[in-house]
Image 1 (cartoon, helix red, strand yellow):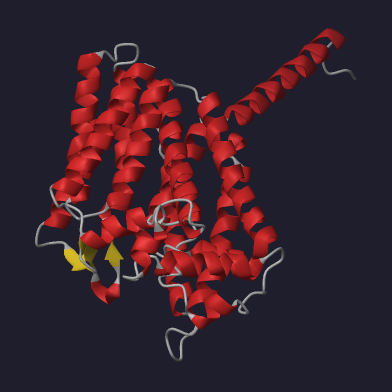
Image 2 (cartoon, rainbow, N blue to C red):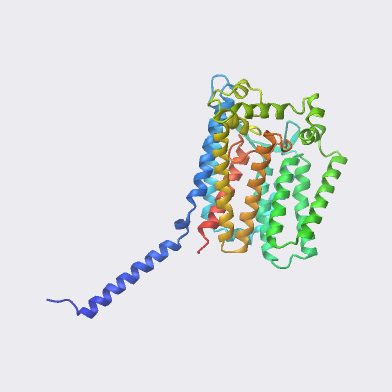
Amino acid sequence: MAFGSPVTRAQSRVGRRSSGLGERSRLDSAPVAHFDWMLVGAVLAITAVGLLMIYSTTHTKIPGDPYYFVKRQAMFAAIGFGAMVGMMVIDYRRLRDFSMLFYVGTVFILMAVLAPLGSNIKGHQAWFQLPGGFTIQPSEFAKLGIVIALAGYCNQFRGELDAWRLTVICALACVPIGLVLLQPDLGTVMVIFAIIVALLAVAGVSGKQLIVLGLLAITGVYAVVGLGLLKQYQIDRLTTFIDSSSGESQGNAYNQTQSKQAIANGRATGEGILNGSQTQGGFVPEQQTDFIFTAVGEEMGFVGAAVLLALFAVVMWRTWRTARLARDFFGVLVCTGILAMFAFQMFENAGMTMGIMPITGIPLPFMSYGGSSLIANFACIGLVANISMRRFS
């Protein structure tokens, strides 16, 4: 006995097929379907290399606990991974609507750390002291706050960035820059300036205006030095890479000399993990933080350093790709700011270890020991992944 005519059965099959196509279309448009595994995979790989190098440079520093620094960094990485996931869950377009709140929050935490709430460590009023020996460095999170705030402002006035709007942007930027200089932290100021230039260039500011801003920035640097906001050792560190002989007698070029020697020792394939003479001898100061790239160069050689830089190149490429494919202009600007931040930090950190850039204390993203930097960087990657996931929704 037939249940329905051939025409009815055919229509039923077409209906099921259409329903299946609709379901597949909905799945394809879901944000999770466009998750950037390559971006996150490259970041996790860099973080793993960082943990290995932190162990190599610190396993003899705490008697009885060779994994002390590694365990803490692994904990920071886990918190950072959670921050990354959190940034991916919330639609990034909601951040656009509250971009000025990010600016206010950024200014607030930078002011708070300069108050008695903050702690002075090694001559820098730049941390909040937490129980258990942990610290938070607000300036690391301020970078992301500035990216979101300025991206929101430039998006709001897209096509209307005249001289007045540009003046407002400069005024907004000068507040956090001035607060960071009071810490003092010239390295973070340099990163913030790189972010601002990149955002303005993509937002449509003319080349002449950017040149004027560059000249004003140079003037500002001379003013900062003249007003004594920087300490003498910071000025010496900035000038040593130009004339190392002048700082050598005072020990200002010691870090750079030892770092270059460590990288030279690595040659093509490196001296092997835990076998680097400079690294294991403790000749490179602050090697687990500012100079961690020297451990890679010495113990993993040119090949290992090239692989690490290739992983960073993947992060840059995927961030740039996301900027190009972003659904809206706000997403383009956010990715541009984060790309500028990562690119400048990577080039400056690796460059200073090789003597081609000044020593500024800028950490190598996902590699250098430090919780604030690692967590903030993971949050930035989460925001880029967020924009990529929602480019079709």
